[in-house]
Length: 442
Image (cartoon, rainbow, N blue to C red; front, side, top):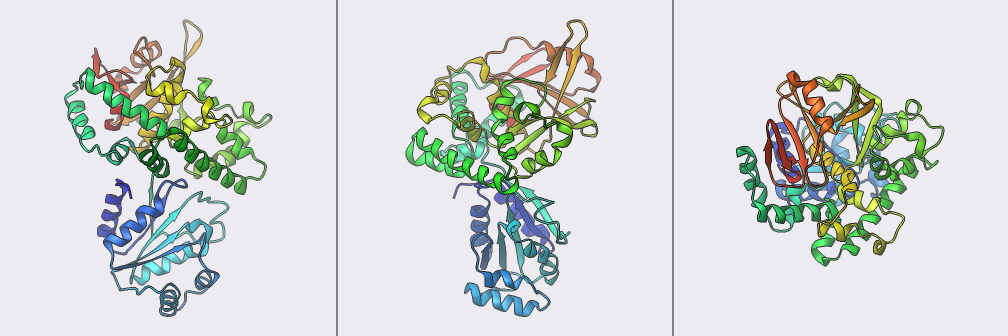
């Protein structure tokens, strides 16, 4: 198993909760939820039972139909699994719990009983379809598991020193130097191609073959497509997902639903978009009409951009309908000969890195009254009751007109100004130009 940061969160939950809450780990399929939870169970408990509701027997499912007698319930559970449960020293895991809502409803009573600890994992948990007939337990604590971030990817390759050293340089606002920067950017581009899905990382480490890695990612995308069709048999959900790279490539001010599905408008597509976001495969960035620390209060639910939660999957989705041999993106990115029009790929990377840090994604567009055109700020984050505008550039830093105009207009509300690009750290008056790999420190 790869080292994952979420493991420390599980440790904290076990210590702080002391059995008073169950932990629900949400995340997209194949992100590694089941693996990390079972590893945690093996290491931190004397025994554990894992119930995978995608394959478990009907006899185990039937136990949840009547939990009025918990002594009988636990006795049968131990008999059917062959695992001895030890009071306050055992963990029971409900894997893919969204497939059997009755088990999730039982959490309230199981936690109150306090004999054992409980964890749940779930993908594509839909509020409307999966839990409409059950009582949602208030005893659940939710955490979101993301694909492996850049540091976790480096750990997998054996590099445990780069990110801590970069953090020191970021805090001192100093660059790493040309040689080190080129090496880290190569690693960053490699991460963009492989991504953070554990299966893809494992395939890369075992084969050192991008075609094999790409095939693994295509298999994951096919799983998502199958899931989307289970939720929406019309295929609209799958089409909206597949169109994300093309929509970002247009450099438009929003995701234009009608260009993907004619006659469908933002106002009457909110349920579909909610399902897509609920799958955790995508991340929305909402337009805010009032740039400030309170930007969330002014977001427009009908005006948004969509990003993939894993940039490695994004690079494969860009060429989903072509064979791997027709995709020269791998070669171009690794040789650093990509064209400037790959800005949307870097934008997806930054969105992923910010979301993994816990930021909700917002952007802002505004009109330039002199030239009659729209300007855009790629991302806005807030700190200390002020905001920090972010502009993303995929190549050598040149101009940033819209960024300058925005910063002048809202100067009193801005704490820090960041431009994320592919060169080493620099300062330009009060603007901090950061290599994209330092996004993790914002």
